[in-house]
Image 1 (cartoon, rainbow, N blue to C red):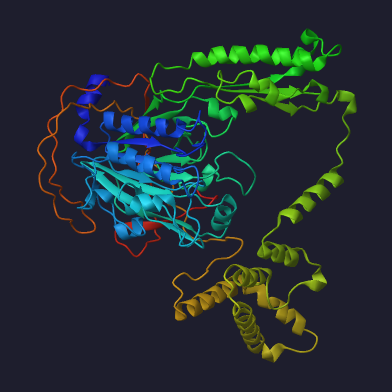
Image 2 (image 1 turned 90 degrees about the vertical axis):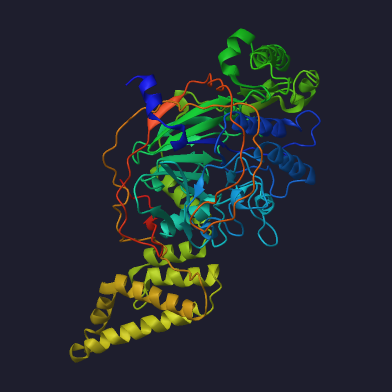
Length: 637
C-alpha cells in the first residue's frame, strides 16, 4: 500500500496527537550560575513542540520537578511556562468519558472547568523526585492541579492495594484508555504484586487503545528494586516508561507480552552518567484506532554532553607507565583526551540561540594503581570558562585485574553461606522473618494448630496496620476450627491417634486460611474500615488469568496523518456548561482557520500497529463500563 493511499484513508479528526516527555526536573541546580537555566530552557522547548505540532494533549512521565518541595522561583517559572503555551482559545477535541471522581482525587479535568481557558491539556503522574510528602501528603503537582494547569493522575493514598481506573478519552473514532501508576518504592510495589493487590480496570467494549504511564526502575537492579516488564498485563498496547534517564524513545516490543515500551528519558542531565550523554528527545505520538506511530524530536536547546571511559591498561606501553613520573604522564594524557572531547562537543551545537554553549565533559579513567591518579579538582581549574563542570570533569575508577594463575576454585559452601547471610541481613520485614522461621523450623517445632501463613498474616497486620486485635482473633478462629475438626472425629479419637487426627486438620489449610481472611475483613467492615488489609504473604491467586491471551495480531504501518497549521484566532464565543460525568462538554471557544501545513519532522518516523484487543476478563467490577484485571508475573508465560 502506498503512502498516498494510507494518508487518504486516515482522517485527522479520528487521529489523536499527543506529545510525550518525561523527567523534566525543573529546578535542577537552579542556583548554579552556569547550569541553573538548563531545565527551564529544555521544558520550554518541549512545550513549543506541543504548540507547533498542534497536539491534542501532553503526557508527562513523572519528575516534572527535581525536588518534592520546589522553590518559589521554580514554581513561578513552571506556571508561567504552562500559562504561556498551554492556555488559549483552541477548542479541545477530546471527549472525556470516564468518571472523573475515580481518575482525579480532588479535582476535575481542567479543560471542562468553566473558569479555565485550556488549549492543550497536560496529563502527568508524579515521580520519585516530586512525590507527595509532608503534612497532608501534598506534592507540587497537587498545586498545579488545584490551579488548573495540570491534570494530575495516578496518585495513590492507600498503598495497601492499587486499583487503577483508566482515563477514557475519545476523538472521532479513536478511543484511548490511559492508565497512570505514579512512583511507588520498588520494594513496596514488589510486595503488592506478590500479595496480588495490583488491579487494572479494563473497558468492556472493544476498540480501546491502552496506554500505561509509569515511573519505576526498568533496569534490573535486584529482585525488589525494579519493575519487570513481564509483570504488566498483555492487553496494554504501549507503556510510557519514566524514571530512566537514557533516551530509548523508539518503541521496543516486549517479546512475551507483545506490547511496546517507549522510554523518553530526561530532558536535562541531572548526573554525569553515560546514559545522560545520549541525545535528549521528546516525541509526537499519533494514534488512529488500533494503529500508532511515534516520531522522536531531538531537543535543540540541551547543553552538549560528552562522556568517555578510558582504560589506562590499554595505554600502559604507549605511555610507559612503568617508569618516570607516572602521575604527570597520566595528567598530560587526560588533557589531550579532554581537548578532543571539547571538540566533539562543538559538533552537538545546533545553532539554537537558547542552547547553552559550555559543554558538560566527563572523562572516566580506569586505573590499576593509586599512583596513576592526580588531583582532578586542580586539573579542572584550568578549564574554567571552557566547560560547564570543571570541578568534576575527571573521575577515577580503580580497576582490579587478575591473571589466570591467580584464579582460585569456587568454594560453593562459602558462597551459599554468604548468600544466606545476605538474605538474612536484607530480610527487614517482620512477616518475612516469621514466614521463613516457621517454614524452615525443625519438625518438632512446627505449629500444630496455626499455620506458617496464618502466623505471617498475624505479624503483618500487627506491624503494618497496628491491629492489636489481630492475634486474638486469628488464634481464637483457629482454635474454633480445630475444635470443630476434633468434634467431627470424636467417635474415633483415642490417646494413641489424637495427634494424627489433629495433623489432618491442615489438609484443608487453604480453605481455612481463606475463611480466616473473610472473618478479618468482615470485622474491618463492621468497624467502618473502607480498606481492610486483605491478602496473603505469598500472593497465591487462583483467579482467571485469561485476560491477556492475544489473538489476531497484525502489523499494519500507519502513515503520518496530515496536519495543518496557520495563524490567526477566531472570535471567542461563550463557554458551554459542564455536562454529565461521563460525557465531555461542548465548549464555545473557537480559533480561526489555520493556514499552510507545517513542515514534517526530519527525524525518521517509527511505524507500527498496535495489537488487536485482548479477551475480556470474567472478573467484573462494580461499574458497567469496565472489568478488573489482576497483574501478576505468571500471566501470559
